[in-house]
Length: 307
Image 1 (cartoon, rainbow, N blue to C red):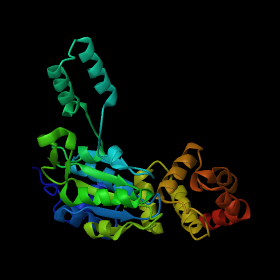
Image 2 (cartoon, rainbow, N blue to C red):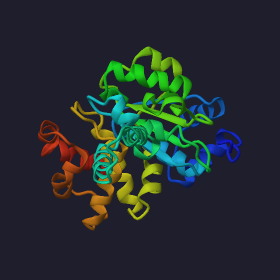
Image 3 (cartoon, rainbow, N blue to C red):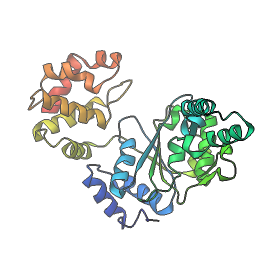
Image 4 (cartoon, rainbow, N blue to C red):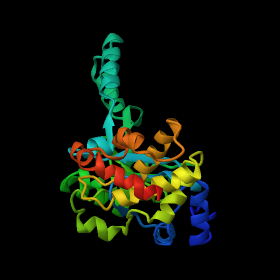
């Protein structure tokens, strides 16, 4: 099985490889990613929305040449949706075809019953798919926004992460499936609630905060290189000062990049109050925040960004 570290000699080499995919990781983040790979441990990334947690898994999959498997979490997510299900429509069709073919005797019913719960009718959901052999090596499994689920699902996930093995009772003796090598697991949380300590103990942990102005400018230059240098600097200054305000939802790096693309599409070469006013909805996603920043407050931010 291919070792995910064959092309990653050390932390600096990993930072360089991430940078080739336009992801500028600081030394602390690059170190914990490297350790997760080297030690074979899941990595739990927490932070506000839009700071680049999900992007870590996407970029890492590209850097390592691995398949990315994403489990998007939500309230009510259960094992059936996350692990496996059965193709009931095809099963019903198989039953109907058997009836039309005259397979109504004991032998026919036994055959149909056996085949209905075979792998050909099994629908692999993300967690099961991540356990399957892959010629390229273990995939990157992204468990995104785990904080949106509930405690029972966390307990179920903990069992999967502990053994990387599941049992599908309907398959009988062939029903135990174990990953030939553990997938590379990235778990993210926006911390809308606390993740259970048992999950945290199983994972390496890192908090991704908002970048300082220098790193955010470098990120913007990498992700939106067509934006004029002067405008990019003004955008970063504006957003950095904006984050100091009492907002319901502070804009993340993703919003900074989106805003830069929006201003570029409007042909802007520098910030002006009128354009900023009509594009604030790219940065701010709540009416209360828009009302708080619109008008004089936004003009002051523009003046400070251009000074």
